Image (tube, rainbow, N blue to C red; front, side, top):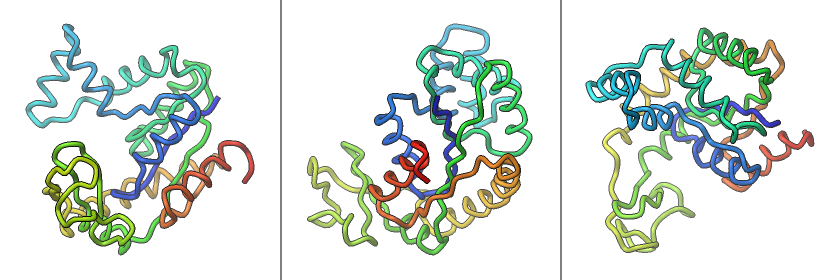
Length: 219
């Protein structure tokens, strides 16, 4: 069983690596956002609550989030493991997650952390461009990731745009929140000897290779 928590600062490539791992090991990539989107489709009391809360810009109560996560992790496709993305975010949530694992008779597994320098991340964020048609991602600050024609997608010819929050000020705010919330969380998991660190400045393929080594016990 490969139960994995993936932790990384903004723009470190956590989503990309989670998808690669999910594909290789045939396990679901579970984000709290995906869980909430699915629940909002339900014609139920909890579905209506989540829809109203998210639509109004509020935060779903932790206790409801715990219930939804436990329900999702008890589904059949999680029997051989899963990747959790976006949960837990702090020590209190980590303790609740321990309780959920206990009720499901599952183990903590791996806490994989992508370590990367703040300046490199800022360069990635401010250079990121996304195709408005096919969502292909480019980076004008990274030579190997620039489009062949400026502002035009190589894949479909669509226009490339910059997200509103892909600016230096927004990134620095998100990075500070990450540091404040994540440091205590990592200390919690380091005490359990479950933290595995990977150099996030490597290429996508190299990072994936390192993660694979961890999951297959070669590191």
